[in-house]
Length: 419
Image (cartoon, rainbow, N blue to C red; front, side):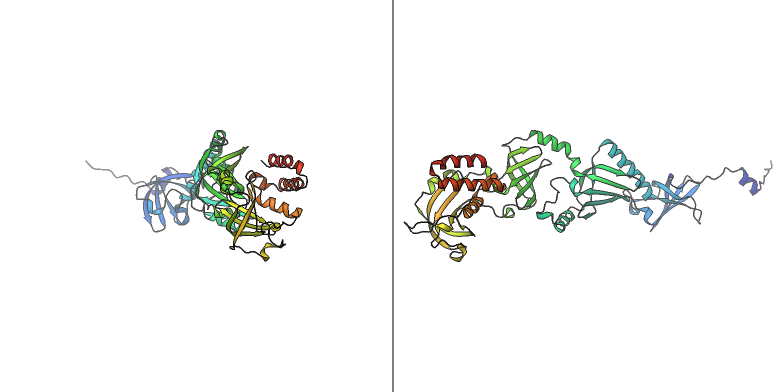
């Protein structure tokens, strides 16, 4: 039996074959990896077309050339249907970007929380880049623990604090999305809003808790806990005089605090109220008229301060120094040992008055201005942050000194005003 050979002309074969359809730019295709070279990947597209991925188009957020193997199936975006070599030019990066956008859009629409890592920082906030999509977390949208609280809003210090956050993982929500320009605005605060609300609803004045120091400024220490943040005013750091809050804590320190006030989302805290008030037994330790050996610790225009105990200082007013000097620094110096007489103990106002005058020597009259300054320096707790209240307090004490019959009433009004 003979086999008949049929010869079909090439032009007929070309005519009878189905037309080769090239993919459109921007289309998504899948194929198997058939070759991996240093900076080029060849992909088989269904046995009909061959694709090429090279250069920066190889890198995406999910794969690198080192992680791919022969036979792996990849999804890529078409950049050019056919180059000079007859290959389809593909991009893993663009394909990944489209997938990432879909993920971001779904997260935005469903109010979902995402995990991100900032790659850069500027004085306005933190920046990130995922497959060419730019994200930005403004400073105002940082959670309390990461918010850069610095004295005077110093831009250089703010930038330095933000740079410390580069590479750290953040939980965020998308609050604005701009696909046309490839930009996202993210918020760490929004990611913790529910937790903040739940935590705030359970807080009560008098509660004690542990927190992390999130900021230290001239007027106090900020402490973050449960997505919330409260302020330990400088008057609530310690029972004694606090001139610099940095002496009592550092950023990131774990501290114990007590809630002493809640006004909306403003939380007032205290560190000193978790310790025993040394003024409770002050009258047992010191008696009016007794002599005390101590040292000068601070000088002010109106007098000298001495340290009696860790948290208790006493004041030697200019009028209680021999010669009544306008500037005590002319006759006294910090560190100088002195023997002073106790002339006043006011446990309610947490004030001890001392004198360096010889027994029987009359003190000079205290000018009104000096009295005001002394009251400001010694005024405790909440009144310390309100100059108007302090001025009023000083005026009333001055008037009470001049009118003994009204002294008790005036001082009582002052105490009620400053509580």
